[in-house]
Amino acid sequence: MSRAVPVRPIVALAGGALAGLSLPPLGWWPMGVIGIAGIAWALRARRFRARLGIGMLAGVGQFTVSLAWAIQFNIAGYIALSILEAVFVAVACSLLPPGRGQLPALAGALTLAEFARESWPFGGLPLGGLVLGQVGGPLGDTARIGGALLVMGVTVLAGAGLAAVVPDWDRKPEGDATTEPAKRHSLLPCLAALASVVVIVAIAGLAPDGSSGGATRQHLLRVALVQGGGRRGLTQLEVPPVKVFDAAVTETTKVPAGTQLILWPEDVAALTAPLQGSATSEQLGQIARAHDATLIAGVTYPVGTSQFRNEIVAYSPTGRLVATFEKVHRVPFGEYVPWRGFFQHLANLQDIPRDAIPGTGSGMIDTPAGRFGVLVSYEVFFADRGRSGVRAGSAAILVPTNTSSYSNGQAPAQEIAASRLQAIEEGRYVLQAAPTGYTAVIDNHGDVLAKTPLSVAAVVTARIPLLSGATWYEQGGDLPIVLAALALLAGGWAAALTGSQEAASQRLSPARRRHRRTSPSR
Figure 1 (tube, helix red, strand yellow):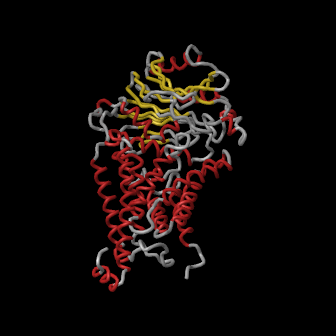
Figure 2 (cartoon, one colour):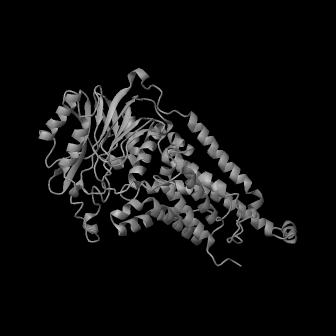
Figure 3 (cartoon, helix red, strand yellow):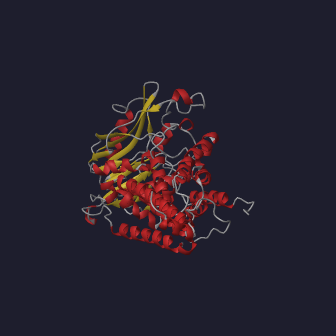
């Protein structure tokens, strides 16, 4: 008789929550593996409807935790967003075979779910994803082979492998004959999964990290990242733009002599008219000349009554505007409202009166200080944006960002994790600058070399190499991992169908098998 307490749904919900807690700022990477183990155990030998429900609970557990930053903006939106993201996990779990083969199939299905989640809707939402909690651990290094999707795959393999040795202690498994008496063999899939993870991690440690062909210690670039500081959790309407600009100007006076590159945050100069020919443009040029350095800063200005531009501009040491990049991947419901005519009937959109004009191009800007890939704020969560700039010749990656509207550190901490992931994937140093934090210097292995506290005014200085080597992920992209995930899912089903046939054969009585052998053919 089944127990009255629904053990597996509870384990699935708790496993998802543990996976969510593995993300920064609270997390520790093993929590993600343990969370997946709980989800994998809860899914074992469940039928379609049960797998769908368990997957939904796991997804709700994860995303209500990892997307908690959204509560401050709109509670209804936070709930809807968490449910939407949980659907990806639910669908992935529903695609699993009910019995044998579930372990590899789970790794494939959840990897495909992450690929879909990072792409749709409205360009995807990588925030809150399990991968961001693995960046600081050994599994994160696999990103230089296959990006975030491979990190997802090996994390699920590790968790599901651990779950394989946990018996079904709650009750007798339900389902069809494919739920073979595998307890005697449960150690084999565990060892196979964990061995696969160890091999992939070992290969990642030997894989190219972008340093081949890089600068020597005698050719390091001297950089300074400026954080103006200030109170967090305020909208742009609550903070006078001149206050943000003046704070950056004040901190820039502390930049040491000999600096070659000065990086300001995104949106540090919020103008009411185009930049060129403005007093702000003249002032930015003067700052670059005064420091004899390349100055890169974020600028926004309106276009007509319903649009605006979000640009990153570079001034040479002579004070001349030499490069401009316009943000390509905009924030839905932050920088623009998709289907505005529809959503204006469901929510108050007065805080988003204008839509950002999407930019084009690789994101690489060529300056006197070097060639840099630019990921403006939200773009850092998308691997294709980093890969685009590096393939165009970027020797380092710049992340001018503005997370000042977030009242706590959850979203900024996840953004740092995304910057670390980009560093590993592309084999480049990453420089991130924010008006109220986090501002950070990250090396090509994803290690944080320097990071400011939130809200304080600060200047971070460093000497970084400009690298030119290529990682395997930069060369191959996501397609090989997507194909591998499809193969794992298909292989899981093949193993399940083979197990069904074997179980059906075993159920035949000896007499009936003898009868089949002796019956004349028709």
